[in-house]
Image (cartoon, rainbow, N blue to C red; front, side, top):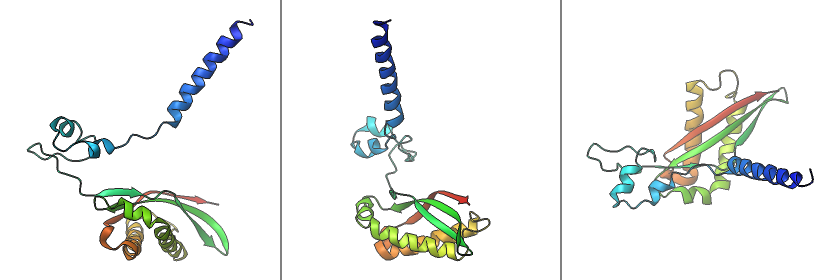
Length: 171
């Protein structure tokens, strides 16, 4: 029994290490398509569908027309009824920018987050997150307001605002 215990502990440690490695590995990245040399036919032929870029009929890569910048943290908006928090709405937002525009967004992110939060608070106070808040017209109104405010900060560098996740938790 004394010799079996160290072997058993080593196997448990190995299993825990493998499990932690699998659970904590980073998400797959589409940077392979961007880092591939455009003149390298083998790389561009192997990656266009995997990178999410359509391939033209003649086999040439259609090229990247936009970058998508996911804002780092989610937005949490309280829905207030009768001076009490009735619900919390959690949103994740991404911005569509021209290729290479990501750096400008990250440099201005604190100011963008402030402006976006103000739009979201105003939307909540106007009843935008009440009832069927995910109805198409309500979401379009919210996206339009978010696009206007982000363009005030970054100009035409913002092509569109994408709400990638939205959830409401009622109290």
